[in-house]
Amino acid sequence: MVAFVGLSPNLEGEEMRIQVPGFEGGDRTDISLPAAQQQLLQALAATGKPLVVVLMSGSAVAVNWAQEHAAAVLEAWYPGEAGGTAIAETLAGVNNPSGRLPVTFYASLDQLPPFDDYSMQNRTYRYFQGKPLYGFGYGLSYSTFEYSNLKLSPAQIQAGENLTVQVDVRNSSKIAGDEVAELYLEFPPRAGAPARALRGFAHVHLQPGEFTTRELHANPARLEYGE
Image (cartoon, rainbow, N blue to C red; front, side):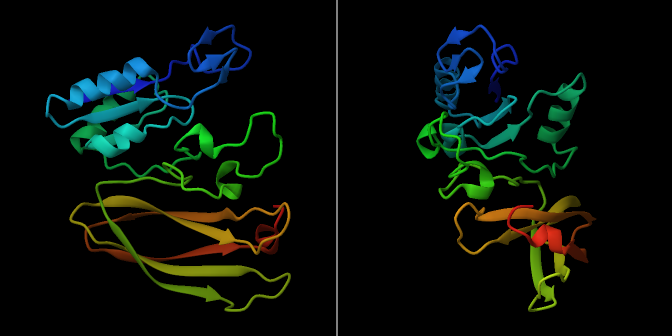
C-alpha cells in the first residue's frame, strides 16, 4: 500500500490567517504529522500489508512512527505536474533516487530551542548537537556505495593554503546509480562557531561494481569558521 500524507501548501506559509492544530497564523506549533494522518497510517499498517509512505510537504516533518513501521518513506516535497509520474517511477524502481535533504528533519520539538530565541545554538545541521530523525544531506537509493582510500593534500594545512580531499567511491550493488559524495568540516569548539559545515560535494554515476576517484576542493575562505 502507498499512503500519501503530509502538509498542504494552504497551511505552510507566512502571515496566513490560519488557526488549526499544529499551525498558528502561518507558524508551525508542531512538527509531527496531523493526528488524523497518523491514525490513518496506523490503521493501514494494521492490515499487515507492506506500507510505503510518500511525504508531501514544504518543510521538515517528524515522521518517527513511519520511520519505525513503514517499509519505506519517500520525501516528495510539493512536486509539479509531472510529480505523479516521478513518484510512480521511483517506487517502481524505474528511477533510482539520489537526492539529499536540504534541511534537518528533527525528531521532535523538544530538540529545538524556543522560536523567540534568536541564537543559532542547536539550530540547523551546523549547530545541532542532538540526533535528528534525518540529518541534513541524508538520502538513500536502490544502490549501495563504499568509500575508501581517503587522502588529504596537504596532510597538514597552513593558513592560506587550499585543501584537496581525494576518495575512491565504488558501487557495491548490482544496480547502476548516482551517489553524492559530501565533504564536511568539523571545527574546534569556539563560542559562536558551527560544529560542522558542508564544504563541497561531487555527483557521480556508477555502474554495478564500478569505482571512481573524486577530488573535492576547499579554498582558504571555505576553511574559515564564518564562511
